[in-house]
Length: 439
Ligand SMILES: *Cc1c(COP(=O)(O)O)cnc(C)c1O
Image (cartoon, rainbow, N blue to C red; front, side, top):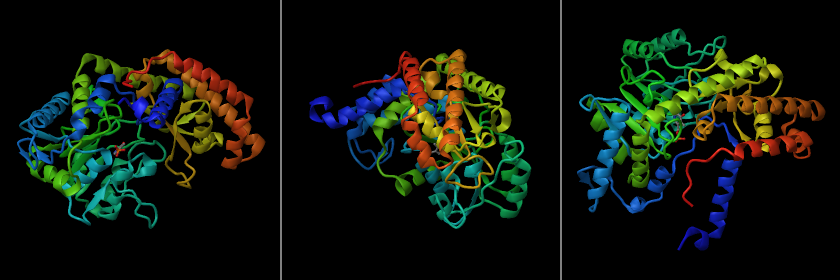
């Protein structure tokens, strides 16, 4: 029986979400619109199969096709990132980015060993050892000793000199490059030198910008890293999953960490969909897409700067910009709420120096998703105008109702400018096609 008849309730929610995606402007930097082909692979019978182990060495029978699939996925992963299979291997079984990182840490470290990653308020990811005060927020800080490094508050760039000093005192066993709200490319060579000076592994987590690495729009971390992790659903535009690349000498450690240490059976429907996406990611069209993603982000950043707004590092090398709202007296939560009310999706994001983690001073904006719907620079000029209006309306509301977020949100509901802008955004957005749909 089709979903529509068997379960109208779930079907209805999916259809409503599809409408939201179609009629809104998706600017969340970690999101994208995957293809119909990827969705078909995700929605296949492969979800029925258990296949713990690796190709040729499984704990269950009936894995002839699954073995072929996993080997194909591994080969495509190495190929898409231009890797030599005598030097690099890849595990394609991770469920998602956080699990991939925890598996990689489990492979490289003993419990309580030391690691250093970019601090969350500096643009790093939760799973790179985040703690706040006495609270070990992420398991990576609970089971390992974490000392985060930061960006330079003046330039917004990773403070490699400070990192070097900290690393020499802390002597981590693992150094992590890569982040989630960092708009610039990385100096992997410098990271390698620092790692070597204290005998640490270097892991690069390129989850956000893996697609841009595949397209050679950003530097490749592989030359300098021991392990590279990436999600497959952000700039790579695939299904939700992750890959762990490793130097061949680490193969058994990484594979054993993924299974049996951290995970059970792989999600074969996801592995099939990742394979489909990796094939797409090695095409000329995907390179063109990635270039457009970056041009769009640069254009958006330039317009915001022209309008006298402050963005961290005054620009971007990547698919994202980090917009510091503190100079205009707004919080990330308020702008996020207003944008939501007009069908523009952004996320509040802490910016370095924020006093409260609960009221972040910025928003993060990414161009990957809308570029998949065909947006080019001139369309992002329109998006920038919409965002500017969101700020103006937010400031006006704030000056009327004061600084409390609950009052602000209540005032949104009855504001005519909000209603008008919402209609304009929905109109504008609805004409751009949405790539994937199977129901
Ligand atoms: C998104 C992200 C992750 C986590 O991925 P999930 O699939 O959400 O678990 C890990 N590391 C970085 C750098 C990310 O941006």
